[in-house]
Image (cartoon, rainbow, N blue to C red; front, top):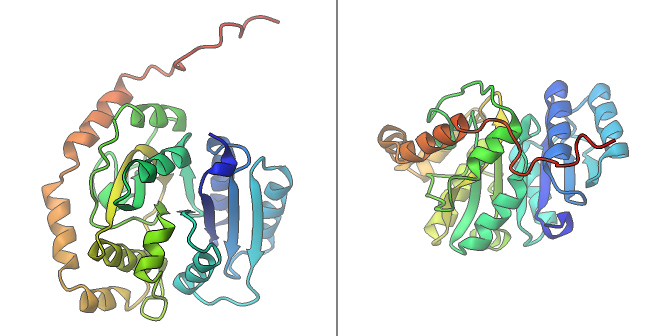
Length: 282
C-alpha cells in the first residue's frame, strides 16, 4: 500500500528525548515510504530534542513536517488545534514515546475501511490499559521483536471487538466521526488522555464504535495520564464511565484473543514467511 494513500500520522512531541528518538526510528522502520507525518510540538522539546527532530527530518523516507508553537497551550488544546487543521481526514495519533511495529498503520487503515461503524481503531500495546497485551490493564515488558509481534498479530483475524474507549498509545480516528461529534473538548479537559475518552464516548453516543485493531501492535513503556481535575470532569459528564471500565477489566472479554496472540507468538520461530532464496548469492 502506498504511504500517500494512508492516513496522516500526528505525533504530539513530548519531553522524553530518548523515547522520541526511539519512536521516530521505529516509525521509519514500520511505516510505508511516503506516509504523511506531522510532528507537532506544543513548545515542549529542548535543544537536544530539536536536534533529534532535525536529524530525523533530514533522513526519513516519510513525508514529514514539524511545527512548534511559540508558547504552550496544553495537550488537549494543542491536539484539538492540530486535528482541526486536518479537516475531516482520518488521523492516526501516535504518542511520541511509543514504538509501532511493522504494518501498524496499514492494519489500522484497513480496520476503518472494513467496518464503517468504527469511529476509532486502537492497536494492542504492552501498556494499553483495556487494549493491553499480554495482561489486561497492566504494563508488561515484552521481549519479542517488533517483527515477531507483527506476525503474531496478523494471525488473529479481523473481528475488531469493541473497547470502552480508545487508548492514547496510538489511535486512528475517523475524521467524519470526529467532526460529527464536535472534536475534542479542550475547554473541559487539559490532558489528551481524558479528552480522548470523552471524544470516544461522544462518538459512541452517536452510533460509532471504539474498536480494537487486533492485527496491529504498538509498544510503549508507560500509560497515558490525566491532568489534575480531568477525571472529576469525566465523572460529572459521564457518571457511568468508571463502572463501565471496571466491568470491562473484570470481565476481560478479550482474554481468548490475547491467548491466541500468545500462542501465535510462541509458534513463531523468527523465520520470515518467504525467506530470500538469493540471500547467499554474492
